[in-house]
Image 1: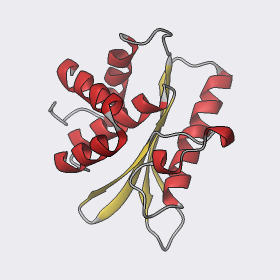
Image 2: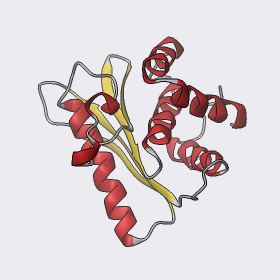
Image 3: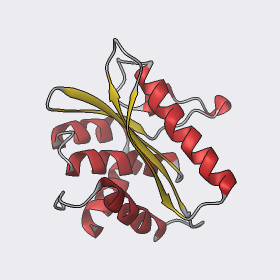
Image 4: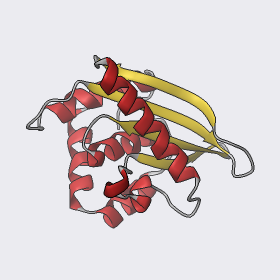
Length: 159
């Protein structure tokens, strides 16, 4: 695990570079958001960050997708990831995860890469900043399959 003394944005930027080394079509970046979740209240924004150089159209698209994933996960408190409510026909993809730290629940969400990478980024980020435990990441990866596990391994080996 890398040290968590940098910022979340710095780590996500580094993860984007790692993921791009294995993709057939390079991505320029994306958006990530972290929100406070309270089942009694609307979501409260903690972080909304643009990563990389994006066209105006892509920036708006990725920002909207990142926020939609977080809102959708919030609407399904029984889910740990937005992939559990995935619906490609409605353009609803994976890429958001639920995590906890110091009694507060958070949702981490990213959009800009294939959804498996979006989710891997957020799991790795939450793990490195102690918002989620290793056993929870392993459980999610086991449920979601080999591809997610491979993305996480690549991130761990490279960062």
